[in-house]
Length: 168
Image (cartoon, rainbow, N blue to C red; front, side, top):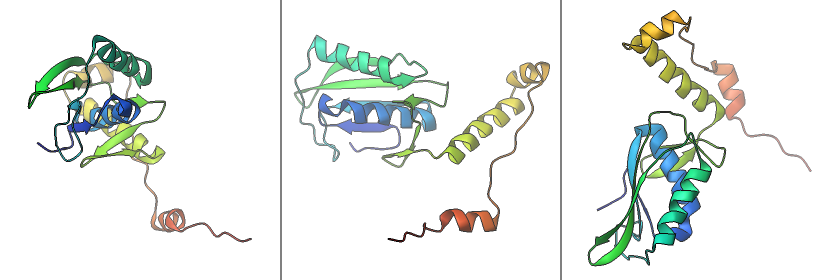
């Protein structure tokens, strides 16, 4: 078993903040995924102490720190004779935010989305919805129109990628 774009491992619930960021990153790219507590990044099952309180704490942290709200399935599961927590989640209301920021899953890493990428992601979702039935009917009724992507021309791109000059 190894991490992927839809599967994340955490050694324990002490990594709960990072887990919430991973959930958001996966949702923003794939709209569903799984997260396991009690598993090292390399896939080694180490287990952890799982109580009703720890399951409630995970549920509360997800509820408090992910917007829009999701309602994951959170269960204790025995893997290789060790107790782990499995969190299965899904959601279609992208973009999702963790701690007020939006992230996207790239391979098995969670990347903070830049404002331009966030905007372009939202434009892509809107444009696809306006081409798909039945959302295109509703969108046309309410006057929604396709939007253009935010792109930099070559001069702007070169200026944006140039590191700032620092003088002391």
